[in-house]
Length: 260
Length: 351
Image 1 (cartoon, each protein chain N blue to C red):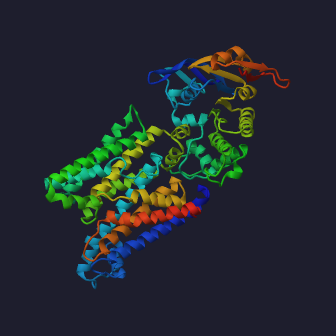
Image 2: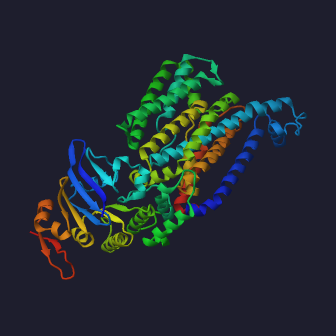
Image 3: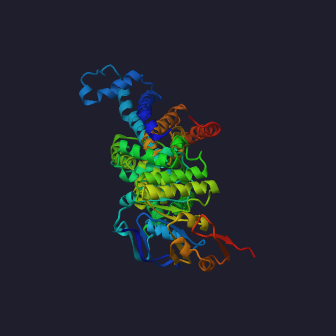
């Protein structure tokens, strides 16, 4: 199987401080990857380098076997979609119009939406259970709904790869599960490669095929959840002591912090 | 309402606004110290259209009335409409690009730059005209363009432009220039009245040559801006999201900023500083039609023209024999009207 994303020895810094150091990483097509790590470990920066929002100082990134520097923004948008953390929108748009923006890379100047665009948007919205919200203003819906709308817009791009930046950090447990189930379904049924940053270690362990654990701009470990999320690794990276509890139904242990 | 559903009515809205515009243009031409009947106005205008000229008989209309319509009122009405259209389109674009509802056509310093240039021109006392433009206008144009260029470059870091830096640089450069203008006014007391009058805006000197020259860039500029409405929609949602949707955000920002500043400079150099239009008209139509720029931009063009045309007509007819600077009218009537709409839209969503 070929690689969806290949990161070769990239370095990145904001000003003087190095945020990413020698990141080397291959992500298989069709995988579900979670990026974990404490605040400031470079998770989001790595994600932004992969989606061409930031340019690495050194090193190369390949997406779909093409050099990221040589892919035009429009072409990239057809391969890779990104669901950013919820940003405030001062302007009024309906949910449907927001999702339709996902068709931008396929549309020509001055041309309006084709029947195909309408069909794909409808499918994306049904897939994310947002079709019922289509007439509502983006301001009228809840945080969980908005996250689903953002994923619907990403789906409308018909991407091979979906990047998510902390998609569940502002949601309650029900909506967290809801969003992750959706990602899992898209990953399994639509064969979309999922790369997401997460804070919740246990949810990440349950949903991902692979986990990338980052610390201070470097890769601490990358591999299967049970091999990455060891007591030692977590202690090293987060600086807290944890207990691993074996649960019957899951092959990955449950991680609980030990209170002192 | 979603764009696709609204699109059905969209042509009707445009048509209605266009009809209103034509109606108001005719009414505005009839008004003034000499009242000219609407029928005569229509006849005079139609007689100027090539293939109709033989069929329409204007021999029974007074020569002086024909002169007033063709050489005084029409140029002024057309110029006011053009400037109104430009100011509201530029306002809409800036509000989108800066993602800030407070942005107006002068955020990048076009107004203070123009005022600086004009003040300079007035003090130097040039009375020559070039291609129908007073030298004051040319100085104003140069001032506006130079100032926005300076602001643009101040806000540029490497190859990227931060919109917050543009706003801040715009404010600082503007207030700097305003102080310089004040000094120049203090030192040149005799020209004070002229400078103040210029800054308050007027279409008094409108002529056909001016119109022909400004129409071409304005027309082209508006067409290019109208072709970027999808990008504006994406930018409004967030720059990062827009880029990941495939929008080349830095390029789009540059094109829109440069074109808009150029258009603002064109407008301000022929009319002086007319505030409020570029702030109010976009908001007014946003309250009615929503934020979709595919609708908002074309509607702002006609809406801005209508708004400023009405204001200018009031400016020249409200007080007998005295002309009120149009910039004052736009604020006096526009302000309260806008506040009323704002209150109304807060209580129950407008439309």
